[in-house]
Image 1 (tube, rainbow, N blue to C red):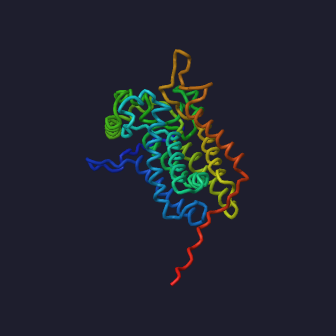
Image 2 (cartoon, helix red, strand yellow):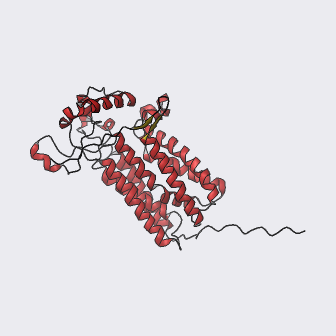
Length: 332
């Protein structure tokens, strides 16, 4: 049976005892650094409607938007029972929603634009061109963490092995693996990771891995679709139109279409969230509306916005940023 072994990198890149540097956190830093570089180039090209010196200020606003929006979105869309508890702020326990983070970024960008009296549409366009490297990096971190894994792509029946692609994987975070390793379902992140390190170090994982089902590495699918492909398409569109930009808001609309469409398709391969399962109603998968997952419902809203933005803003060409005229020299 063809498959790829899960690399089992430690989610903690550097453990200093009092401080842990995790791959997940590092990838967010990578995303913001890459975004800063791209926004600076867009400012130099006069596409971003403010001077390069303002980029760092915007990044600060965006960091707050991602963290606050991502956490509130996670609680609102996926764990509403946390909204009335202190755990709504427990980011260290995991749980950030991309769609919530995106909404936080939009609010932060619009507020920043209003403060500096520039086009919010063009600021959002600039962010659309700058965000995809960060999406790619964070999806890789999801893969390292073994979270957001895909659906089972074969059964343990050897006659069904052909249903699994040759890149299918067995994840140590799979509920079957956790049960075999004796890790409680309610175990915290640190406790679970410590037991997994022990399992890999003692060879216990090799003993039980064949009992774990093969799954799609959906995190890699998302990294390629939402990050790499969407980023390349947006880059090509920008390069083709850089001398005569499309209407303000169109690039942001294209991003919504590309991300929303890609994520909508990948959701058919990604394991839906367990809290939405309703076995009594015959839903053993975890859908929320007309057979669609929560991710697909939220992406449908992104696709609708993208279509409206592209359709309504296509002809609103407002050109590149013009620097204000220099002040006349003082008279002696």
